[in-house]
Length: 260
Image 1 (cartoon, rainbow, N blue to C red):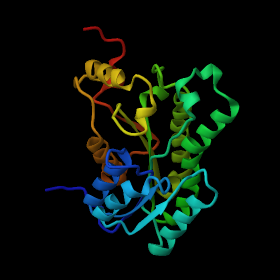
Image 2: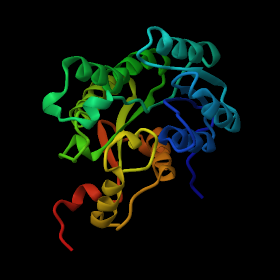
Image 3: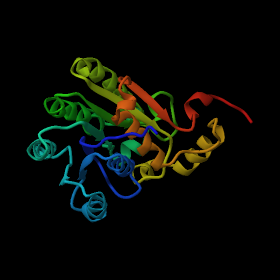
């Protein structure tokens, strides 16, 4: 019987917020496949929600990581280097926008707000790739999260649409640059899932209902399914996949304007 085996691999999961977050389910499934994991959380406010989850998985590294705070991201990679001497997997689950920009028109988005959202949601992935590269001497897998709003207009997604589009382009360019060293770079375009991050999007419940109605599978997806996709991309079963935006959305992205 074939099974995904990540024993001996070292995985860094950045951006666990709570038990509903996609990063948590990625960590849970990657650990379940045998990898050792390091987990980061945003700040002291998030720590009480994340610390028990990290303990549940026996995480060997548990650190704060606000990518907007100078030095915190570098400290995480330094800890991984000291503890393990290498990395095989990095899962990036970091996104942010000012409330007024997320809820307002893109037309009215401030330059500062747009820059901050790009730096935190997109450039942080580039920084992680740069820090991970010397630790992935035998190759590795970099994974980030996107959404259909990067490809088509989704009402109320606003500034995050262009930001996620930039992230998806970043995936392709990083895959091109890092491929010769055996490092694969992919994004999971997840269907709408109720997480703390998603709660900031207006009319999100309506978005979920529309996705369930239009998706070929006539349902939405859950965080557990995204975690399984992360395992696939992290494993040898995904060895030929790089530069890809893999849709895990019950097929919603192919539906277009379907009338029932």
